[in-house]
Length: 102
Image 1 (tube, rainbow, N blue to C red):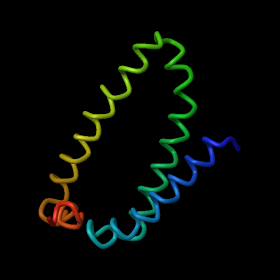
Image 2 (cartoon, rainbow, N blue to C red):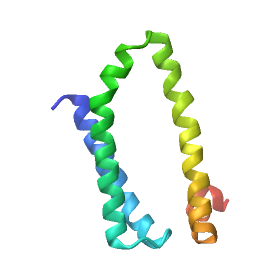
Image 3 (tube, one colour):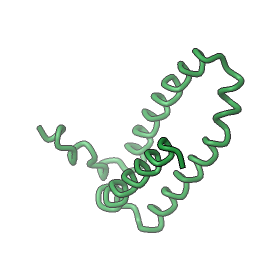
């Protein structure tokens, strides 16, 4: 495994360590639902890794650099809106962050 691959695996593992308690305590998800979300996360990483070389090869270099943030920022905002609509007042994420408690 390359150095980048090791760093990505470490990041994904750390993300899961933080996500599981958060999802169960703060979002009220069941153990099965948390497992499903983690499985979906892994499947998405595999599909993205397989599709990315083909998508980027079809673009100019500069365009590929522009597309990343142009797509990821609206999608991330959509996830936040979706979570607020689904979970409503049960989502206490911002209250749990030390900088938001300020």
